[in-house]
Image 1 (cartoon, rainbow, N blue to C red):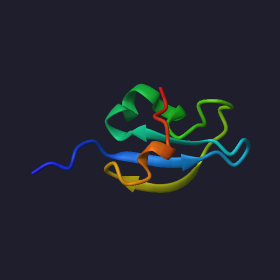
Image 2 (spheres, one colour):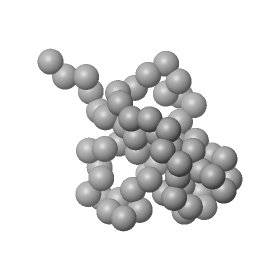
Image 3 (tube, rainbow, N blue to C red):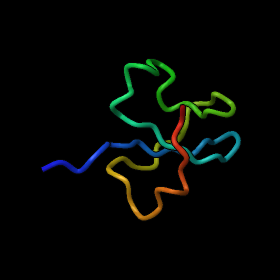
Image 4 (cartoon, rainbow, N blue to C red):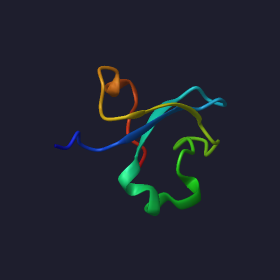
Length: 62
């Protein structure tokens, strides 16, 4: 049984943006995994897991 993609959810301490990273793409991001897509500040970890009820509050980082 699979639960789908695992996401890591963050909030930027500098600009306040909420975002998520798809864990299966960790290799693509390298050391930038977890950084704010807007200002490149390391994000504050919120949680990890599959998509939840509040998933739409966290746009996926690209």
